[in-house]
Structure formats: structure tokens, C-alpha cells
Image (cartoon, rainbow, N blue to C red; front, side, top):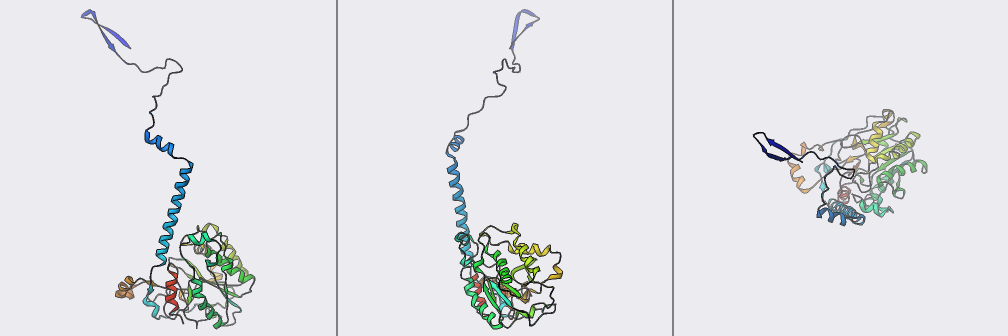
Length: 346
């Protein structure tokens, strides 16, 4: 817009000043917005290249890469070599149960275990973190010999595995069947990666005489209780306990994880149980669920310099010579660990 201003000293000479005024739309077709910038060539290239099929291929490639890494790392861990910790060859007294025990007349005592080696779910077996193939075959004869020595009944619950969950959850089904169909008075669950180390120890030696006590379970590292070995009296309370445990579906982990979720579920169930003190006993872990300790060759050299300062030295929680049973939780090369224990079993 042009504005004319006259010079008062020289009326004949006018000064013209150009000044832009704010934009005002002249009609309804005018726009208040600036023109959009054209998209870059890079953006147009990506937009034209990316489609549903490409996204699908990318996602499948990522999943397969993760599975491949999972299997390679799992195989590496499952072939790591171990040796027995020095405490395997050392005796230390195990504290006796602080309650009155049966000693005899316990009725029919049954022992059960299982493995996923018979599972029909090939996918579940492929993506599992730890390889349990051949584990039960390694420890089965050890368990048979112990059961025959004392007149116990031994059962393999592998055919009961529920493939909709990690195999460890099916221990609940195996124990429940022995209550309902085989009429066992006491059922002892043992994970497949356990070895009876002292066959002279009898189960009656730690069964409670108090009829109101239904569950015996040992402690776990980090707090709570360990579901790898436990004993249940065949009662209505025990059946309800198993049912409640099985119904804790929120704890079920996806297939292939190192942990199945059953142990955390049992911990939560016992933690919130209002009648825990009335019906549950937890003797020292060396009573029937000693954790075995293994070291690498390099760790062995370091440990020997300060053996008595190790947290597992003379501990009631870790296997020492003379304990009833040794358990190998947390170790991936199960076969190596169990071979070492079986050489020391008596």
C-alpha cells in the first residue's frame, strides 16, 4: 500500500512510502495458512517402499533372530563345565526337625517326578531355556533303588504334562493324581534334577506325627519356599492347596523362559495363607532339599584360598556329605552336575 506524504518545506515535492499492512482475506477462497512444503525425497522413498508385506517380513526376521540367539546362548550355557564344590566331600550336622516325627506307620508313601522329554509339543521343547532331555533317565535308577530299599512307590508323571503351560506346572497334576487314583497317604514330589545322596535316610524320619500338618516345604534362596521338593499329606486341605496353586494363572510364564512361574506362585500362595502356621512346616533345607553347589575350575582355585568365608560353607541350606538329597536348581548343564552327584551317592 502506498502512502504519500508532502514535505512542508517543499509542497511540490511529495515522498511516497511503501508500507505493508497485515494480510486481510479479500474473499472466502483466500487462505490464512502458508503453503505446505513438499515432502523430501527420502520420505517419499520410505513411504513408497514400506507396506504391509515388508513389515511382516521384518517382524518375522526379528523374531527368528531372537530365537536363534536364545538357542545359541542356551546351548552355550548347557555345555558349561562344572566340578563339585569342596563341601560335597565335607560332613556337617544337619539340624533335626523341631517337631515330633512319625518314624514309622506313615501309611503308603509315594514319590513322583516328571520330565518334558516325552512332551508332544515340539515347539515348547525347542524354545525352552534349559534342556532336561535325558535328566530323568540319569536319576531314575537312583530313585528306584531308594524306593525299593524302603518300600515306597515311585511314579513317573511325564504323561500328565499340560502343554499349555511350562512343564514344571504339571507337578501339581502329578501329585493330585496320586491323591485321587493311587490313594497314597503321603506324596513326595522331587524335581527330575534331584539325587538321593544318602539312601539310609527314611522319609518317615521327617514326617510330622501331628495330623493337622499337611505340607512340608523347604526354604528358597532369596526368601520364600522352593517347590523343587515338597511333601503333602493326602487330605482335603492338600487337595484345595493344589487347586489354588494351579489356579494362579497370572504367574504362568511364557514358554522358553528360564523360570516357569510355578515357584513364585507357590511363594505367593504360602505368603498370603491365613492358616500357614496351623498346617505347614518348613524344616531346615538340608532335611530333604539340600542345594548342591558347583564351581568352575577357575572359581575352585579362588575359593580354596578363603573357603570358610564362603556363604555356603557349613550352611544348612547347601549339600554336604551325609545329607539325604541334593538338588541342582539354577544350573543349565544339568547332565554334568547330576553325573558328579551320582558318583558320590550312597
